[in-house]
Length: 180
Image (cartoon, rainbow, N blue to C red; front, side):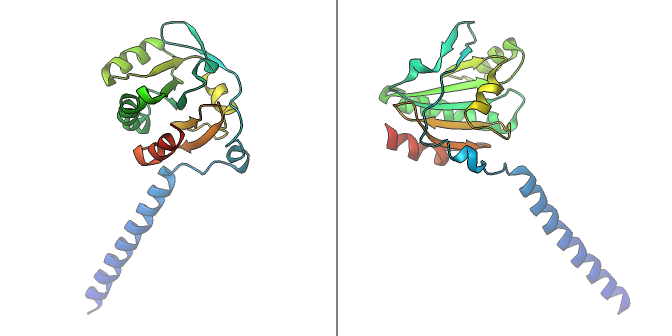
């Protein structure tokens, strides 16, 4: 009887440990919520910025005024970033003709790696790769320095939506449709 109780206790402790461990893993994998200061940026105009494109041309964000913009900060080594690239490709394909422009801003330090990765992934949207990318991210509300970090900008250049962590279609498409 004592061996059975010990065994049952061990199994119970193991099960409880599994539940607590799973909860901890899920909690650590979940990005934090944007701060109140970051959330207060929704509805404000995006400040002027320019970054280098993969072809070496300096691109200014004001050139996309009049379009709904999905600005996505990412890196080639970021797993959640890789997961959301197919969604961004699909959104660009489906809504580009209606005035959507997806803009991927890579924080990678080696432009050649970004070029190779973009070809491998079949990226069909604007890609910028510049040493100032993280500074632009902070300026646009990424106070936690998290990637991926995604914003949706309305046609007038105001922030309409922001998301820390991996964005899926359900996170982005309703706002995009509303703004188009």
